[in-house]
Image (cartoon, rainbow, N blue to C red; front, side, top):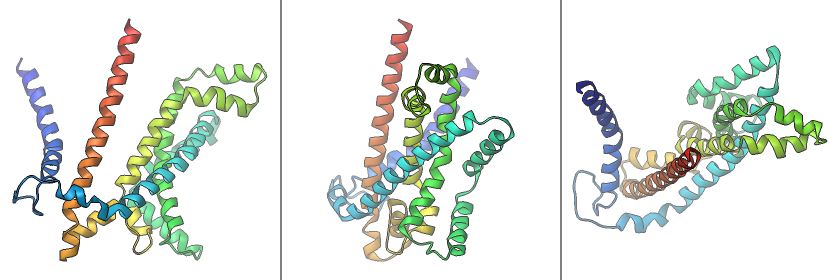
Length: 265
């Protein structure tokens, strides 16, 4: 009884430590005042002003979606290639694909800057920024797809070839449908990583080009009146992102529970 109470209390404290700051942020997004510590009345004032940062939101969403799509394609193909590679080559490539996952983003950003400088290219460009986000996300897609490949019946691909399918047809009609949940998970993870990234974006983005992460940093770091005016607006935007994410998670969990109950029956 005491152990159960302690374990539940420990879990409660961890959840409180994680979610209380978020709930405070959500509450303060409805504060008509700029400061978190001074409540000046309930208002949707900052939500109305979201139009002032529409360019930043557009840049962020476009970068996240495009880079996530490319990273998902490359990561999925990479996972399939690694899975079917045998011997020392397969193990070597598999090990190398995991290095970016544990590697610091600072190292990745600095490495890309040096690479662009060696190639006499401008490291602050849209193309370089997209390359950085793709390199950041693709290894995580590999990690998401690989378990689904291991769960798949390996004889399905060979059976498709025996029945007359070409390797390309077997890939699209047999392998990809089997690993689709892993691909979707990798895609969502790639979008999340892109939305959350600051270091690579701040290092490789062109001057004057902002995403939500860099814009929030500038709004907080700068002490000018114009910059500080944006801070409450980003609180409102963050609240919308949190509620949208929470809704998606709840829907996914409800679907998973429903499928589990159907399988039991």
